[in-house]
Image 1 (cartoon, one colour):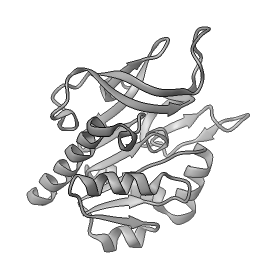
Image 2 (tube, rainbow, N blue to C red; image 1 turned 90 degrees about the vertical axis):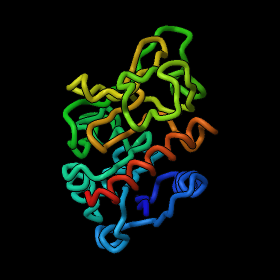
Image 3 (spheres, one colour; image 1 turned 180 degrees about the horizontal axis):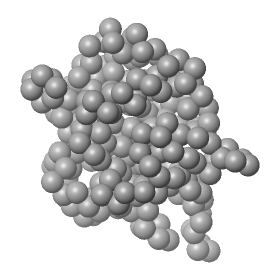
Image 4 (cartoon, rainbow, N blue to C red; image 1 turned 30 degrees about the vertical axis):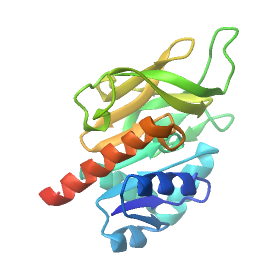
Length: 216
């Protein structure tokens, strides 16, 4: 069972449909009690829109603590786009002073500054290079040259380079995905990335199933 967090602003339907397409059982959750009741093997935080709204919604329901404790316990977790940015300490998004994130990992989320000719937001297909080639999230995918769909104006800068799972070049290299233990997050949208994106969800579901079998 994969629990998908509904924070009120996420691309819920496309993510749940993608997970179901790869054979996962899915339950939408809105509170910590629903996460517990789902007895889930994996937790997914999707997201579109404003980070401030996303974090505020998680804090209002108590799901911010659920996400932090879930990751600290090394239970399978997947953040998507805004769900990746929310894991860091602070973002430049949100006007003066920016927005505080969940602080799961040290690092910042910065506004894209790119040379002339590069449009912001970064929108469309782009190739990624996996810097953790042995990661289970890369199973069935090439180390270099796989294309995924991006839509974002901000990018994550982890304080620890070892956290980086994949990189992308858009007028300069930026972090396209992160991984530590059974926690994964992607700046790109797997649910919008056709067969390669479905492989990401298939791999995450496999990680969750293996963790459940191992009693983690």
